[in-house]
Image 1 (tube, rainbow, N blue to C red):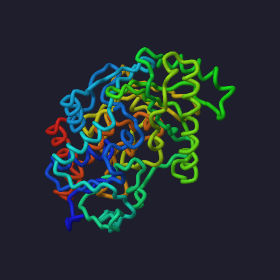
Image 2 (image 1 turned 45 degrees about the vertical axis):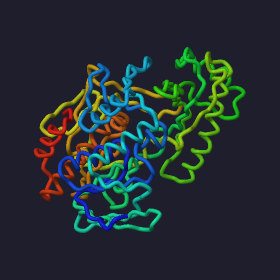
Image 3 (image 1 turned 90 degrees about the vertical axis):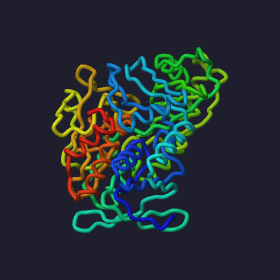
Length: 416
């Protein structure tokens, strides 16, 4: 690492929210350090093979996220890989991704923005003075490094910085959290294969009496990848406590075992799957929920359901319905009025206890049901973008300034 360890804005976590926060802050004129524990960017898309951006479009197929997120879509178009798909069973429109292209696009965008990127670096502690974070310690192969900053953004997904600095957090009971899923990528599935939920249910029902493990979920989302033509399959669920390392370890092992049971069921009786093979899992479990920020405001289920809008304090739009994975084996959807979108307020990304801390992505402050909408990657680009700009404004002025933040979001092409 270089001697440069002082920045205007320090962002923890290089998933969709962290990428947007870092680029947004840099384009607002701040010096930015982005800390990522893996050797690549992308969050769940690249660490868990969730190769679909959810939340860029509402159910009317209107785009509701742009800004830094638009830069990603533009890069996908430049590489001739931009592809959307509307899932028949849900009516939701997703942007399909290719794993290696996604890593490369994110590398290029962060580099072009002039962000100081630290891969293989994990947050281990934070120092606070008088209600503000002044520094974080990260560990990497070279040892422990202290990074100081004027403003900090937690986009770690698990609220690593929120926890490290003792900021107010929302941690639901494990039974009330969204389930985790080990994503499967399956090769040699014929182009005319049955990918329907109904077909999966029939195959699982036939196989279940002979399964070595309980196959609680009968069906899931199956999507064809744009380049490899593999099928991305979200069906191997786990409802353990991802904040308990023993539970999480068991979930990783058991979910991998379970994936082979689903593959066997589909090979046996699902049309077009006979010659298929398990190309990969994960590589890690796709964790949907652990902890999140307690903000000055919280998005509620009523805000989502009613498509609530308030342009006086809005920093982002949310257009993904409440996709609830709490009930074991099923996914329940809660719609948005008129299949539209709702506003996310500034107070939902600001810590109510630490003045210079913001949190985006699935850390955005919300109640349990609204969380089932806010957590997706497309919306995370929007909330992360707002966090980065708000932090840059604070670093420059020493105060929260919604008006200036909103102006810069507009300049950078965000949809609000």
